[in-house]
Image (cartoon, rainbow, N blue to C red; front, side, top):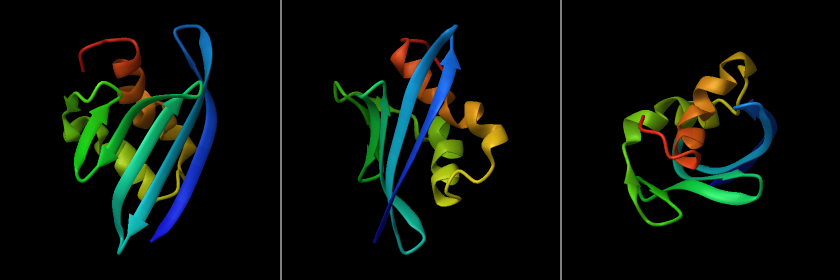
Length: 96
């Protein structure tokens, strides 16, 4: 199992946020992802379920790009906003 981390700053609704993504890969499959914005947990992937900090489930289809980016170690930074959009949708209480 390998563990990786990605940190960046994203401007969302005219505010800059520090985003930190941690993930673990086992046998070519992402088994764990933790997404934090400004040091606070927003959502995590555990045992195939996307859960927010209150324990509510989220549709895995919304996080497909993020999961794929973790496998690629965020090599294509031009797609960064699209990959991180579901995190901010949860953070700001928007429907995806």
